[in-house]
Image (cartoon, rainbow, N blue to C red):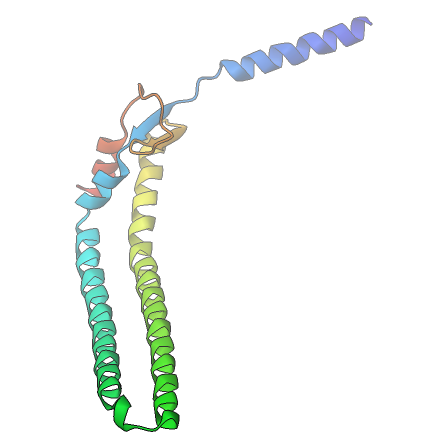
Length: 166
């Protein structure tokens, strides 16, 4: 019985000493820092141009399909039922192709975005890690996150800006 109480006492002492170590927490305004990075501004412009190009291609295909549909509608009265059915099937296939093209364009934009932002994310994450180690922070929370309920710790934004040279 004495061994059990000594063991329980040792466990409680260990548990309380572990809980006694305070965790250092800081907040960071991630969006502000990312928007200040010149690389991000350049990539945003590049991605916007790419997205507009894809949008223009989609609009061109839609206009071509609309023109063909209007032509077929005007000629429908003078065509046989078989020709009209073939044209209807052709327009249906064209509509499906446009939808596939739109999906492919969205996928292309998403992939290009991911590839373009990867180096910025790495640079940012490395700067956050260096700032956290230099200042002894155990955790850094995004200040704009909706799960942040209470903020009374140091703000890591300045330290990360310094690490990025901003």
